Image (cartoon, rainbow, N blue to C red; front, top):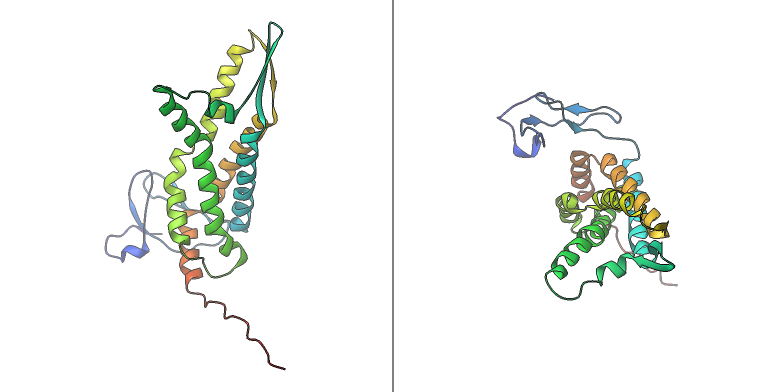
Length: 222
């Protein structure tokens, strides 16, 4: 891959770290193309990446949905037991300025990861099945990438871990199914992001859009 300034825009790829432009070329699976200036990985196609990312996105959908309705934490203190779910947290502040904080937190912890998993599943399904791209698949993938910084599942898990360490000295804690679902969800989100080669997916979507549409089956008269 060479640096150049006199090539079509469609053939250029910018480094997300230092903004240096390169001329993109397809490379073999398992190889990596890196920025000449900062060595950031720009292209890294992997075998069966679409199927793997699709499976992880579907798993994220299931985990996010299930985590809402299962207990997240159980606290025992002074003979009193209090069970908390994510849905309880979302509805705990009904008035005042904390409503904005609650809605924003729930959106970043639950809604954004859920929406991003849906969009990725929609964009990657035809690539994994080697079919023609669905209508709006490019838009779905673009929105999913733009939502990536706003999905804060990992930050939520780290924040909970720090808070629980402090609370553990005051009460006995039992972790519910939703807590472990979020641990798995955080790992899956990282694996999805590591599986996705953005340039390869854009190229695959371009090729998938060129495939002919399936013709409806004709009925045979008897």
